[in-house]
Structures are given as C-alpha cells and as structure tokens.
Image (cartoon, rainbow, N blue to C red):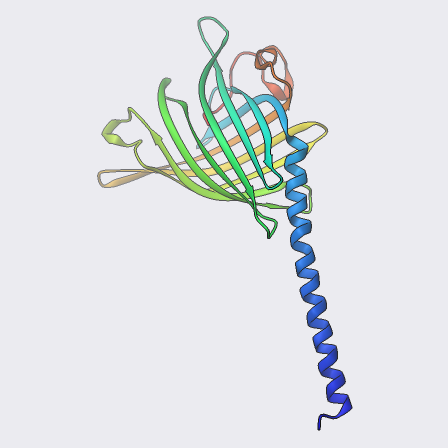
Length: 236
C-alpha cells in the first residue's frame, strides 16, 4: 500500500505539471492576441518611403502606398504599390506591387507570404523583377514583430542569365509602430548562380510610413519621408 508521504509527493508533482501546462496553454492565446492586435492597430491606408542599399550602395528613394485589411480574426492582407520619381516630369511612376498574406497560428506566431513584381535599377537601367518570400513572425516584448524567412527573387535582362532563380537567404525584418509611424526594417541576402559561379548581394531596406492615401504629398516633405528629389532609395 502506498504510504502517505509518497502519495503526497506524487500529488504535488501532478499539481505542478498541471500548473506548468496551464501556464503554457495560457501563453499561446496571449501571444496570438498580441500579434492580432498589432495588425489590427495598423489596418488602414499608409504612405511612405523605402530607403535601400545593396552592399552599402544607396539606391534611389522609392515611395509606396499600402492598404492593410483584416480578412478574418486570424488573417490579414496587405497591398503595396511602389512608385519612383520620373526624371523628366518630376511626377510619380508606378513600378511594382507586393501582396502580403498574413496568417496567425494558434501558437501565437504568424506567417507572411509575400509575392509581387517590380523594377530595380541595375547600372542605372531598369530591370523587371519578381519576388516570392515566406516569413515567420513572432511578437517581441518590445511591442514589435520579428520575422525570419527565405524565398526567391528573379531579375530579367541580366547577362548570362545571372538574375534567374535568385535565392533569398537570411531574410530578417522587424515591424514596429511608434507615435503613429509604421516602420519595417529588412535585411536579406540574395544569391544568383550562373554557369560555374555564384554572386550574392546584401540588401538593407527601411520602410517608413504615415497614415494617408496621397503618395504625391510626400515628394516635397523633408525628413523621414524623403527629400523630394528621389535620392537615396530602394527596390522592393
């Protein structure tokens, strides 16, 4: 027959296990709620700039208009339209789009599927590009979203077919919202293989946005939303 002390120990262990399981089970819905509430806090229309450099070389500023919608309580969609300044007219020319489908999992993480087309400048010549990335996002204690992922990027018109089947590796990004300013910082490595060699590039991009619908109003706005001359920016 089991003695009372042994039974008491088993009971305490069982209670401890139940308590640990309840804490873990309670943490998952909390994390899920945090990610959901973050996206709910940024739904709507945004306008901003994207500043990018590749291997330390700054590209021309690009501007964007984004619409973020809640599809279901656990899914959101984002549409980015990208623009650059036309050198001849000084107006904005649409150069690409990106669609982001976000699905929130029961464990509190979220997955982004990013697809789209656009334009990049290579030796000051426009080249068409296509991208397809997948990111896994998690909520941080600082109130931001951290993401890691990978995918593909193809650039047409490159010599020796160098731009085909580019692999995106070590994609890391952070989403934050502070004082009404939405900021997305992204770092990634893109590797292209042609014949018997591989060429890789390190890309850094910073998307900074304010609520609004008229992208053109950013052209003459100094500070974080661009210099007005189209200098200093990115491709998608």
